[in-house]
Image (cartoon, rainbow, N blue to C red; front, side, top):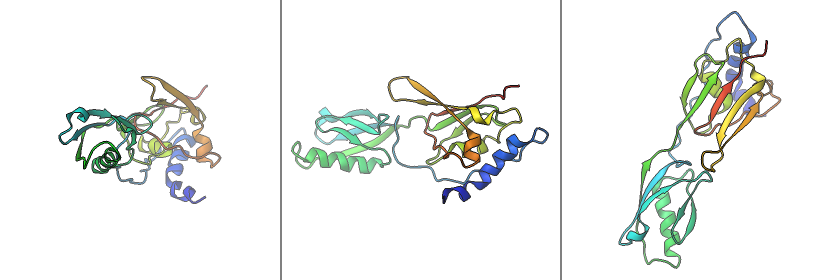
Length: 199
C-alpha cells in the first residue's frame, strides 16, 4: 500500500506511453537510487591469507551469493564489502583451523551490472543496474513504451546460475500499472523484451 504513491510518476509515464498513438510520450525519470557498494553474484574476489598460500586465489560469487572457500565451505557475501568478507573468513578460519588468521580481500572484477531493455520502447539498449531498480522504472528510463507495444506480454530473461542456462517469464506491465500486480525488482544481467502488439 505504501509503495504505490512512490511509483505514481513512473506509472503515469507508462500510461501516457501506451495510451496514445499520436504523441511521443514524455520521458519520466525513475527515482534516483544510490548504487550498491556490496558484492553481487558474478563478482570475482582475490583473497589472500597471510603466510597461508594454500588459500590464496580468485573466488567467484555464485548465483546464490556465496563463495566456496577451502576448509570453511560456503561463505555468504552478497551485499557485503570486501573488508566485511575478510572479517567473516577470518572468523571462520579461526574457529578450529588457524591461529589469528589475517585475510585481505580485493575485488578483482565486477560481474555484469547492466540490464538490457529491447523491443517496443523509445530508447532500447542497456541501462546501468541499480540496487532496487524495478521493471516499471527501467521502462521509464528507456523512454517509455511506443504506441505499438504490447504491455501485457513483456518478456523477462534471467540467468538461473546453472552455467549458461536462462529462464524466460511473461509479465503483464499493464497489470503492474493498474495496481493488480507487484512491480518486479530487476537483477544484473536481466534482459527485458517488449513485443509488438498483435494487429
